Amino acid sequence: MAKPPPDLDRFHFIRLDLVEKWDKYLKVNAVGFNEQAPPTFWLPIGRGCPYDCIHCGGGREAYCLATGRDKPILRSPVRIAEDIEKLTEKGVRVVNFTHDPQIGGKGYYAELLQEVRRRKMDVSAYTEIFQLPSQGFVEEYGKTFTYPILAISPESASEEVRSFAGKLFSNDQLFSALDILERSQIDILLYFCVGLPGETLRSFDVFKRLVKRIFLDTKRALVVPPFPYTIDPNCLMALHPEKLGVKLIFKKFEDYERMSKTSGSWEQSIGHETRELSRHDIYRVTVQSNEYVARIMRQRADEIGTGTVVVG
Image (cartoon, rainbow, N blue to C red; front, side):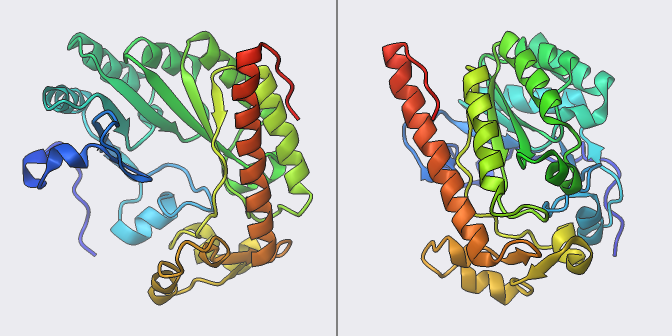
């Protein structure tokens, strides 16, 4: 395998002129095209990852296997800020970062955000944090963008399952981070994954308790209703299934191809089982979790209007 390039600044990542109807492309998101959506661009700021979360196909071992890159590399802050400036000139209003800038260290993310501020741009940002945000990062991030959003992925409500999966923080640490974000007036999205090794049918009760606490204790945090996890090729669960207590259902490209033609069947999109949960069990808990969060969100919206908050 050829060695990956040691420098990403030689590449151009925002060549919208190469995309037909690029102005429409900027209004496409995870659920499709929306004419009313603000023009948004996913901006690459690096390659690779220092973490090895067992369910992620972009983790350290997976990325090394696919590309030969054994450690992450980040673009220079100046080049990233230049790209953001050019994107805003094209009408982009929201920039989504592909990586958590914190993996470059305090000096890196501080320089990046200072470079963005120096250009005095009216631009919002969405960033998925790989672990938890530091207070220093939150402060810099919050004063840089017009409308800043951070996403955190606890993955499991169980601290034991979360740690085994590669997310190295407790529930108390999570809520401390949420408090810092609230005080900095940054909106938060929280993502959970159903079907990790170690979860059981009773994990839904643990999940409900944590979601209740989030909605009662925070005002700016939104739990995203969990959807089926289709096991990532090359993630540690796929590379070392026996070691991690996983039974693979999807093993080949053809398995994923067949799944993609199942007309959106949630159960058929689940590509693994664990020692504790069958495919059908994972499906059931996913549906329960999704419906519970959706119900709480509707209830919360109704109660905000009446001034009464009761999370059931």
